[in-house]
Image 1: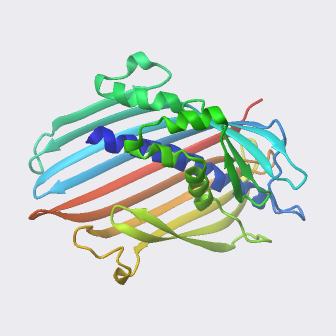
Image 2: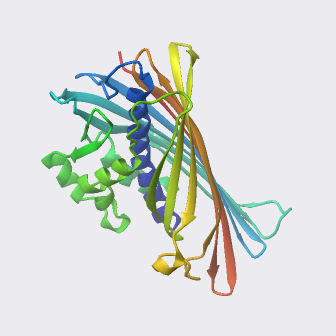
Image 3: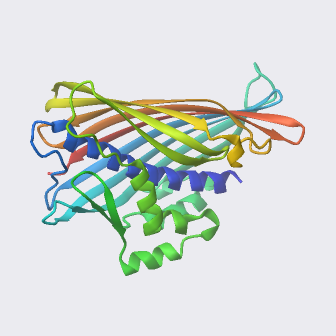
Length: 325
């Protein structure tokens, strides 16, 4: 059960990571703000290396029994701008080049007791020999996704126009295990939906101190939620490589009206609390996103037979992006 759930979560995170790139690089074109034309200005043959680091902790309580799982995920990706048309729409070939994963968990019957080991999973695509026994099946599922070229077409304003895959890639995706919904997640339609939902088209013009919102609906284990992201352009500052534009983002999550039939069911449980925030830094002189740090914590409870399961999940995600020389 753990392996199936974690495999799906890992693939979702990989897609989410790609989606974050779409979000934060869109901010780059708007942040410059000194130009009369505020838009993406990627050039053919631009190459970028992207590194994601996610630390997660999940604490679950059933009566007095506690289970805690910590995970660390590192994902490396490449972006190659293969072409830019006369309208400024850029075709970006992206690929995941490596995944390193470490998971540790323990369980205890009540607070104060020493926890008993629950699991330990290690997966390293760069050094398969270091993969733990429990991670070998997961490694086998991940390996076909490495260096898989997927073309993303993006407009100068940051809108995701299309996601394309070659015939060979489409065949490989069609052979992915359907039990984990990987075919749907990595299909052109699935990727376009995920990246499009995460991309941000900024107000024009943009001035320091300006704040704007983006609202969307998101599927969760607790039903459909309304997500509101609030962005603020904080201003510019000096960085190691030149002038940096800084943005903040905060996220709110709330259930939709229970009369919609999507929320309020006692079987689904309920959202106890959610908080999300982050910072985005843009290298203005070199014209690309350089760093982001995002944090979120969600607490839920869900009935199970005659018991109540309470879970708190915390995530810290950092992304670094640099141009390849």
